[in-house]
Length: 113
Length: 112
Image (cartoon, rainbow over all chains, first blue to last red; front, top):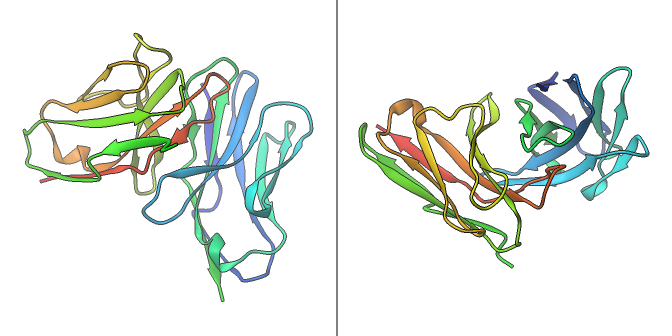
């Protein structure tokens, strides 16, 4: 079984500042890792995914994440945030061959003008 | 392409009433899922269907039933609604493992 811990429930950040949203996972098998974004009153949209290969993954809207197997982390970063990045972000993990995606509890990013 | 569509968008039920949430996808995906989202809890898997003709329980299946009607459609039924089932319900679909589901817009359900 897998589990995901998002270390911050809320992150306020000023516009144009960098941001890092932290995610740690636990699993006894090889994993696939994902970040989703949810804008208010909408469904979830895939930002990026790590399946294999390069540990630095680039996604949409200027976000990137780095897979660190030794620290079992998959932190999401953006060098300069915009007001439009205000949303809730979910880290998720699935085991190899599994159909079950386990989500973290989410991090609410608030971008302050 | 509409992607994943869900009906209804909103619903208010009284305790004990039943209802079916409908979901359809037009991406020819094999796998479909039902999640519920509660504040501070993230998303939790209720049921999934890896392929047409199969369904399996997820993390929180109690109080729910599902039907994979065909490759496109996957419905979720509440036989006797309870206030604890007040939530936002998301349907999703994916091509295969590794899963990266595409989500629908959600159904907001209030059980009084």
